[in-house]
Length: 173
Image 1 (cartoon, rainbow, N blue to C red):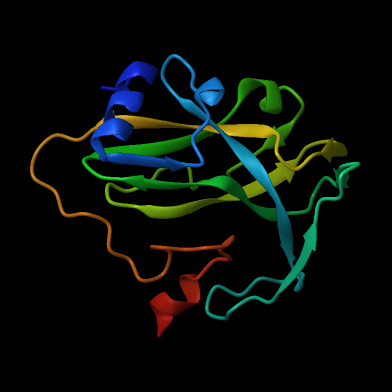
Image 2: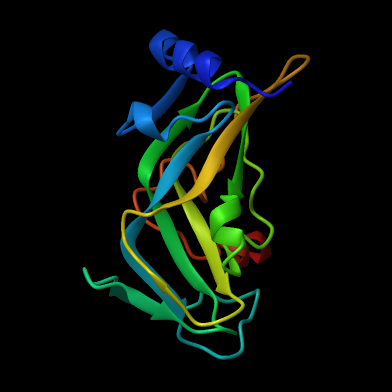
C-alpha cells in the first residue's frame, strides 16, 4: 500500500520517516514534493565507461534560471534530505514537470528501505527548458513493506551529502 499524506506526516512525527526541511505546503494527498537544489553537474566525457570513475563538470543554477539542452544528462539533487525506516521510498517526477518534457530520473526512481540522504536526479530534457532552483520538481511516496527485511546499507550511496555520480565502477573492483 502507498501511504497517504496524513500517514506520511504521522510517520515523520514518529521518527520513522525524515524529510528535512519539511514544509507542510509541499505535502500532497499521497506524496511529498521535493525541490531542485541549485547545484547541477554533467559528465565531462562523451563516452561513459562503466568500469571507470567519470569526472563531472559542476555548475549552479543562477537566480534567473538556466536553460537545459536536449540530449544532455544533467545530475541534480533535491534540497530535502530524507531518511526512511520501515517503508520503501519511491521517486517520480511531478506531472506538471513531465508535461514540459522534463524527466527527473531515467531508472533510479526506486529507493530502498533504510535509505538516508539526498535524492540524486537524472535530469533529461526533450526540448530546451529553463529551470529554476527551488522548484518543486519531483515527489517522494512510500510503500509499506511486507515481511522481514534488512535495511539498505550500501557504502556507495548511503548518507550522501551531495549529488552522486554513478559509482558502478566500484562493482568491478
